Image 1 (cartoon, each protein chain N blue to C red):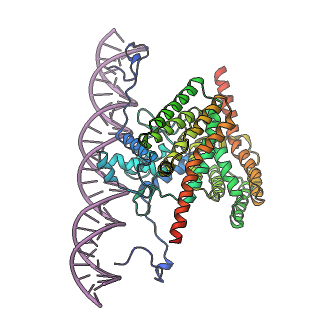
Image 2: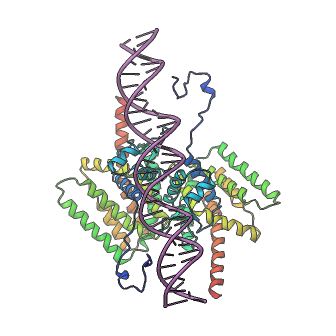
Image 3: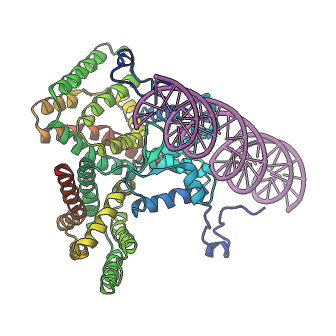
Length: 244
Length: 244
DNA sequence: TCAATGCAAGTGTGATCACAAATCAAATAA
DNA sequence: TTATTTGATTTGTGATCACACTTGCATTGA
């Protein structure tokens, strides 16, 4: 029989890309990740294995393993009852997450600023264009699109930092702060958002100039904004609840 | 029936500690973690589900879920063949790991330096004593004890940093660098080790003085040492292999 | 009326089985 | 002898089942 591995001398195989055999578990895991980062689940929401299995049209087996993985990266939380929920938002946790993100994503973008190729810089520049385009026809508040584009922009930069260790950590941080961010973005929309892409333009400019410090500062401002916004919102609600 | 939760008014229940119901999966996970951090597995070693299940005297189910968790935190690596191995050591990966550890553990110890209570400081001081004691009767190179004590010392500090986000990341980093460190410690023993506890004493002194910068510097020196040692070793081997 | 009790449905965990893919070794052909 | 093939074994994946625990609700008792 033919060997399954692509033969370098085979002119046909050379043109074929490996098809990949992702497992059901991987699909479930990625789907849950997407939902979490996009903030499709509410904080404190309880998730059940069978419920997710039904919704995803599969058996319980891939779901339970995907949940276990998400729990270890703190994207979900295992209660003592052995049920699993998306972690609730607290002020302490938000500050903690923001500090970690500033530390790690700041380091990643500083590394990327000295390493990004002109081609990569052109890619993120074109993303700025997409952003403007989306703002131009703001007929509806397309929060999903906003979240996706924002994620693509940031990770295009982080991937260029060249650290196989930092990137998974950043992914974990986004997973953990996803539910918070979603709430913040909705709050932005209600509050009449200021220019969301302003910091992104500054970031691109700094990276193009290979100015690591400027890039880091702009990034810190960018990721701090939703957190401080949400923090003010939560504090206001807490004060209102206290007086009531 | 009696409520399962401890009643505050019940004089008997007040003296009883909750028994805890850890699952088999958790035990397997913790055992594999311990082995990984301690460097009991060799880099590039392939692990099989059934093999581990037999060794751990359990079925495949808890093992496969534990392996999946370890893969997501990059403590293990999933090959395209769908087999899983402990990641091999490369120079790039070591540099990457060291940089991340300096960044994150440095931040954690700087935080801890301003927050540790006198009681906590007394705890790590007593650990220094254990260390000296172990060095005094160095009849055999007790690498396991050394690794365990080193881990206990560092995490006693990290736990005091008060960040529920940073600590799991540090655990993941230790998991990933465990196999490297083990190799380095053996190399130390062969090379006639210099005072391993020297930096630890500096760390304790800095923390007692609430000097965050000094503590961070000493920690960086402490965790850099095995990496640079191993790096020199690998480079020497590579050169030897190249000339041969 | 309200708290305690008991039953039923729901849920997570672990074991076992079926299946497909990979791996390894012996046997065969060049 | 060397390269290829073929078959048996091993291995990961997904499904299903059994069991224990939790949860929610209706019933019963004071």
